Length: 454
Image 1: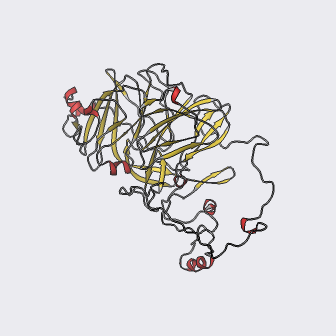
Image 2: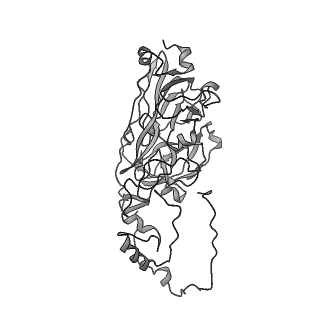
Image 3: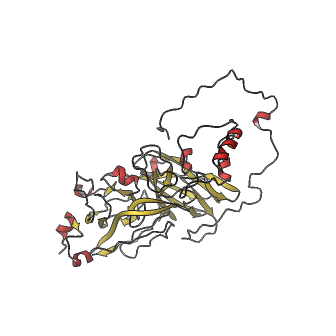
């Protein structure tokens, strides 16, 4: 029989009876990449649920006052953008796994079943809990072997935004997409936690997937070519929708290998919390960009008082592109037309890039291997949006219904509020009084090695 002692020691699917297995909550699987509606708590203490961007919240069952969840670590197929899928590892059919939402003071029991080809574990990042529940393979527990189910049980002791991920072969397992969000809501009115109208959450993650392939290169340390939110890249990232005047909270966790300065257009915000807990009101200041380092959570809040479609993105320029190459030469000012014509005889459709910049890439579809994300993609109301990767929009509209998260379409600009053309200006080389560059002048450029500032 499955008793409390065997639960806390870890259980084997192969070693327990059918009756004991029936005692486990049924794992709920989700394969859609769409943002799911917030999960209003059907039982237990009430709270204002989060919306996981391109994700979902795990349902639970109540068992003698304990919230029970079941996470299944397994290979998954994730649509990262329309027409581009990746073979990842995740939980319950997705990468990242489902968000876990509980209330401060809840006793939580999480079953973890391992359907991977290697051992794993589960670390509850930022939680205060018994040492034996911390999930560090070899230090606080043996690893969970393939085909086995283990259980973790502890009390959610403080409110905040947290994560879960393995601490077993984590270089491989996290590079393959194994991670998820954990939200602990306050049990009562909290002096440092405001009530909000909309509460969004997502994780930053990165992959190195060569064009035409679908499996990440897990040995990559710095030169990733896909920078994603919840394993999605623009134009596959859903917008964050808000009604004008809403107080909006956005929770962001970073499980990539570098920092990310997250920037919102048209609004100021404050950092109101970290994975260490709420930030005291006296320690906050207005920002439009906040840097999120590796392994950190940042909770930001703003009043969505400006209507429009406002860009929201990482401010590292290379992180708003897809399928980048790190060995592409700079071709600015180089006339490659003769070379291009010769190569086209051998490679039909060949195009030299970069003579006058890369904008041309946003307005044409260059042929590439099957299952390759375009470098810059997404169509806006005025043409191609020259962005990819870690990019989305905060869409603010007046008159939205409370709880309406559907995409409202493109913003209709009031008369007199849209930038417009007023005339033509000569190109830089044609400007009056300009002279051709002196051939004797040479500029020595030293390119830093690697991508340490990437």
